[in-house]
Amino acid sequence: MTVTIDAERLLSRLNVLGNIGREEGRLTRLAASDADKAGRDQLVDWFEEAGLEVRIDRIGNVFGIWNVPGDTSPLMMGSHIDTVINAGILDGCYGVLSALSVIEAMRSADVEPDRSVIVGAFTNEEGVRYAPDMMGSLVYAGGMDTDAALAVTGHDDTVLGEELARIGYAGDMEPGSIVPSAFIEAHIEQGPVLEAENKLMGAVANLQGISWQKVTIRGEANHAGTTPTYLRKDAGLAAARVITYLRQLVEGSDSVATVGTIRFEPNAINVIPDFAEFTIDLRDPDEATLKAREAALADYLAELETQDGVRIETEPLARFEPVVFDPEIVGLIEDCAAARQLSCRKMTSGAGHDAQMMARICPTAMIFVPSRKGISHNPLEHTDDASLVAGAQVLLDTAVRIVVR
Image 1 (cartoon, rainbow, N blue to C red):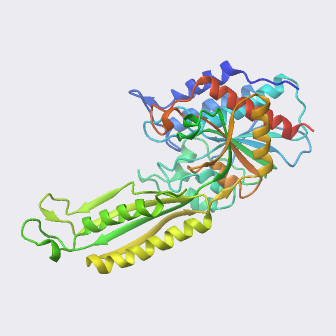
Image 2 (image 1 turned 180 degrees about the vertical axis):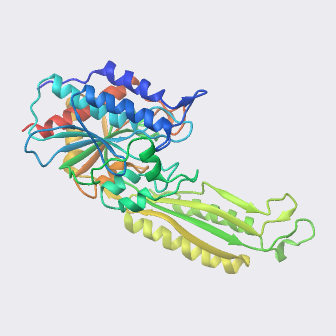
Image 3 (image 1 turned 180 degrees about the horizontal axis):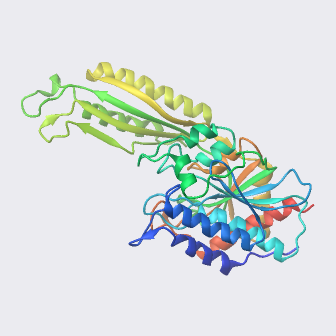
């Protein structure tokens, strides 16, 4: 059976959605904002044009459903349409619109699936306005109470549940009430591996575990000119030691470590810092290794307190175990790529995605397409049109093999 993606329609929609929420050249479509409402409205219009039933759950996840009467084991595909600040147009949106293109292609070719097919667009994947990230899929998979999520206050002092109601996307369906038999998410890689290895497709076999924590170091403020080095309790120096240690900890391994935010007080050029606060992002695809890295860091911080005469406190911010995706679906993606003569690499995702939450409740996998220079969360985010279409085609081929017996 030959079924083909409508390339022109997919690419056109990506550009249309990519201009919703754009002001002064910057695309920003934060969860439950007015721009998010406009994006959701457009998506719902496309769902309805495709003849899909539109359902919205209590956390605001939006679903376009191609119903097969009597089916209780649907295939779900999708991602998210909320963005970071000053975003590119592909992150998340590509997965949602590819999934819609898959259903439209099957319906145009008179494919008769033996199960329902669903497109899902999950709320607040980015976590920019409300924490945690991947919230909609986390709630859907039972990892967070719906009412607790709706009560979350954003960085702008708004409440998520109130904002969803304000924009008209506080649905009545209970999250998780439709349990899919499988979930597949197509996504741009957001990293440099596929491009560097000249591969056209990624079959994502697993996803790194993530450990986030905040570290606070307290020392003693003093004069920068009159205090000898050996008498200092320098919180800034201690922070620098931690950052250097983290690089040494992960060098030459699959682990990665990042200090993405840092703050000193009193933050004056001629005063030794008595306070340093920074975040640590540790990741590894193996849970045992990630735990070992966390333990090694804790031991180092304890040693540093004694060595530098400072006090150190840590606060966990987020912790997700590594996810292993379904080998059968991953193999199916590889087979479909090979049938299209597309070079494919089995790989690990370094970023978090809605698929990692959905893997809690059903067999799940992801398809990656290359990102130019590995850039994402940035207006320079780019994937060649041919690669976008090829990824959607492999998603289509995989879906057909799942839903047509």
